[in-house]
Image (cartoon, rainbow, N blue to C red; front, side, top):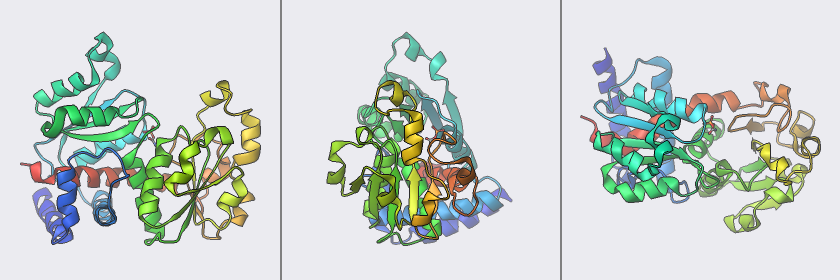
Length: 334
Ligand code: CP
């Protein structure tokens, strides 16, 4: 049953990949570290692959496409969604998974992150999914370990969170397949958000108009150079918006004096049903999680099945990560 299914999916994947230079571009890429240099063709293929895996995940038993490969999750920062969905995605493709307990690993004795990954590669781990608080940490491991392993950046400091950007893009394209000309607002703490950066690069490549809004202390000065429109107030950013991505307010920013008070932030930037009236009637709201309910958006909006895509984002995390693992690694399975 399983091998019959795998052969069916394999045929569909072959059809999808046939004659597409984007398929070899993905394989040659080896690592997924950022969204900045992903081409439109690579994104088209990615979205189609994620859609196929979403159907397979919903309706079919696990596949055997990555049998023989071991994926290591190395998370130096906490995670609910990303780590779990990478684990489920890898298992659904037939790979083995290990979750390194970084708090009990030899990192606590001074081992470097490169050496930690190197030990696992010596045990024939094929892919490292890494989250770390330092920007550039995934690039460092990829550079040092080269072609001996595939590195997927699961979040590096403020810099990038490519699979979150890809799952957000996939979720938006399920609602509106062509994002050319769509208005997408990103609201909140842009400065410290790897999600914002990864989303902006992808949305620009897809031809969307990106508007950001947040407290001036939380908007980086170089934002306009990324081709986005900057607002200090929420309303002009969300007016006529097709999608609104609300970002988590990192509560420690208040202690740093970057947000006057949580009450003030809520008054100026919290999204609710009343404020949503100036957006498109069909507007959809996203949030990468974890949500501070009542601060970034109201409880009612988080759970509103018409406007909120938050649950769909979480569901799509699995298919997105299946697509990332498959497109990077398919030629290595036994
Ligand atoms: N969106 C996101 O990265 O969530 P986690 O921190 O739970 O992985």
